Image (cartoon, rainbow, N blue to C red):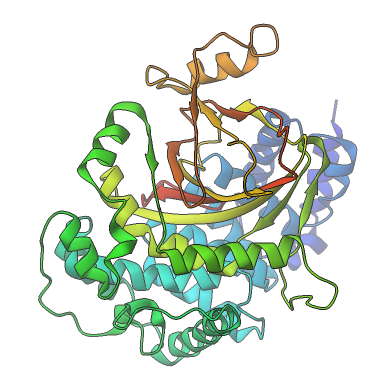
Length: 442
């Protein structure tokens, strides 16, 4: 007896549907796999099925869901086939981020330039983070032990054949965007900082002899200018990270950048009627936890990239920053006990402060060092309602400009309801190891 899914597959595999799609003998396998993943995730519902009315939608959803499961090769194949059927800036941006996370620098640049050629603004999308990250990797590979000599050579080898003019055009747009934001906040980068974006991308320049050195001095030297960015990269932080899966970083950002980040978020979360910012960023409400969210705010993306050398030093891994999430909690807001999905491998929670400022600290609780695997963490979360004291959790008190770096999929974390303060603001910076098997599509 045929199921609804069988009938829908017959329709999607009809000659008319096939004539609008690339030749793909594996489409029925893609469909079956999509059905299995949708069932696993509880998405096999009438409305979800009705939305799959053509092959393009099937490939897009298949690619997105398989990225969440880190089935990277199949995901990239489906997204590429979808782009052959219909150009989409959103898909190009997704593929740019996925390619970067896999270490496919050429694919990342090609996807980024495709967005620009499509006439879409780089504002508030992953192209901003993408090219700044490439710049960061190139700089690190010249000066830091985290990428070493092979890093820049790999980037330049992968990008051979890419049209330099295309990259320069996108780079110009990124530079303009970042410069506008910095100017509006009266913010200036240190002299010599390679991320000023004022010249050609370093990853397109001929390689120089890299200086392979170790330690914090290498990190500050690699960026030129302000060593205050790298004070968090200490052996003590690295040791705590290794033993506990989290570490507290005091005074994370140089003061001028921290104050600018606070002003930026106050303007976005609490705009004055006479000072509405022109931005494509949209505030998302989360009534269940009495909070509001901003994804990939541009200054936060820049800062997340700027922190890459220090965070790579602490963790001992070559990382990509995958996203930023800015959060404003209102009184009574809380964070339910949870662990993050595997794609959200490393998180850095930066405290922007409470209002009023003299309110009592609002701790973030984390699980103990013994909690190292996903199944154990899940059992803690699932048993929380019946036994909230199942684990002797540790409160972490963060002052403004303090950060907590933690392994989200291994460490249960939560906050009790905000009792005294009227609101609290944080920025979460996401990171993940660069790996061919990682989608990094967050």
